[in-house]
Length: 277
Ligand code: KIV
Ligand code: NA
Image (tube, rainbow, N blue to C red; front, top):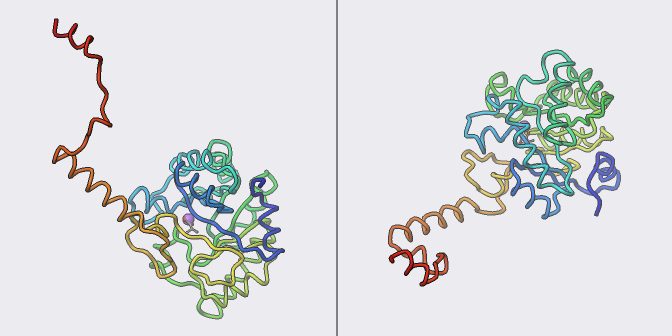
């Protein structure tokens, strides 16, 4: 089937077909997700934690995002690749932000960027969209603001906070965002926002009322991720598989069980005779 586009993603919402999004940070992961039929791949700045070992997404740079996006887009033939703009790369002037988004598109070959924040981002979203850069919004728990929020907590639980989130969502749609990620919000609020918006919502810890779901690759596979939140469901245990295989490799090297002849090259006897003279 033909590659996913912003238009087909919006069409999925209209037709009531749920959107499947998964993160990926390198070529093999992107290839596997693509082959499994994932609709959208997010090169999330969560790579700071699950791939680079940082404590938050704050240290992630634009270079990091461009680098990983290049690998992911080489592996994704069908899925629509969205890349996170990292911490502080879209809070200066609109021109600076546009230049940074441009690098993600031109060097990384992403098809869209994702930015965290509310109505204050409307002018940037308008400029990006006019310039041919599709934008995904991100509301609720916005991990780049973890030090402001005081931890990874559920957002939008009071009427005031819920109203603000809804107003922000409408402002992002109005500015031209073609999809919206909602992270860690009560399911009732996520469902309300999903009904009020015509663009698709993609939830993570936001319940079944969203138009799609996103999770982190390493989390669903139990692949070395450390603190896994409540909203994650584990679909595999790659970490145990990998550790078990490496342990066996180490044991066999130490015992001499590996390598066997089948893993080994030989030279012709006559060559050996000439060597020894
Ligand atoms: O960085 C990321 O992986 C994300 C998703 C969790 C939405 O932003
Ligand atoms: Na992110």
